[in-house]
Image 1 (cartoon, rainbow, N blue to C red):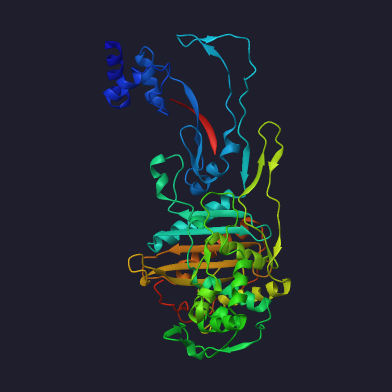
Image 2: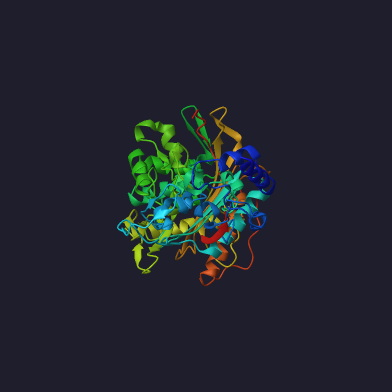
Length: 512
């Protein structure tokens, strides 16, 4: 007993642990017990130099993430035994873990192995598979840098940026703020992959799908014009307002000026069933099947719950919960000639010994728009960047060297305390495609609850969108467009809004 106590006291001083706890471990009847795992090299050396009877140092593998915070919430992390806990580590755990060696044996009373000559149940260790993600390290870095700048500048609660390859819907970047370093256990609980785990009423970025559905079903023609009634429309006791006082706008002009009144009138022509079917066609209300844990399906209410105000609200992005990834996939489909591909983040998985490809997502394209409708919408999205007094909501957003198309969004959030839309809680968004003539990437930027003076999507999310688009296209080798050298000055743009105020890795050995 004295030997156990002396050893426990020595270890307590070396490890900074409780003496009684160590005594209990050392007094165990088990032949082996962990005292402490994944200690530092310095502690391991001091324990070894102490030369304590019965105490030994052994090495075991530990997952190490050399890129640190880069793509932290996407990669996730594993526990001390190498089992995936979050992110890709969890989703692909069975493939990544491999198999430990197994040895069946009899032991005598002292714990020594008896040689029986029977190795029938023995197996050799097998390394885990190689999982290759679609994420591009540089594009991920650009997205995270732009997002951090946007969130900190506007004192926001959180933010997300997702970049998709238009042709395949492979995810090139998936940035979240706050983020974490998977190597630091203490920080892991402070962030999550909000691009798939959080669903929002994203506001005006959803108007694109209302217009797309109406054009696809022949409810409106691109040249149709609408009386915007100077930006004010009464529905029952509710009054829907625009930030502008436009009188007449065509379909493209409604997107350009982000007119709620115009969008509602288009939705009325499309009808409840048509709008509902459009949203479902684009994948809203169901999971994308992304190879990551924790994805939310979002919510599209059945039409019987809409009513007249409900149709209006859904048409411009309220009463529908969507994730940033769902929105990005929808925009990618518009840019891909109307072909929808499920977004994917795992490019392939290869066998560790043979290098043979054992998993790779095959594209299952699904047409959601005709090619004609897709090509009709693209220039409309480009008009959002029009300059001048009567320009688009993104006219102050300048993308260095490229023409893009997109949609701004500024939506109110529901206050959890009052269950009503709060005047001080905003969601600032920007979604779009670039280059707009032949789209290569779809980008969605979401800034959650900006706390500074600015909250409009163009002001808050626009600069991050512009930076990510320009840097990504240059990196991909896309030739720059010939753009005007000077932007036309004009008045400050405000996002149109009107609310239905209802109560609504790498492995290394570590001493243990």
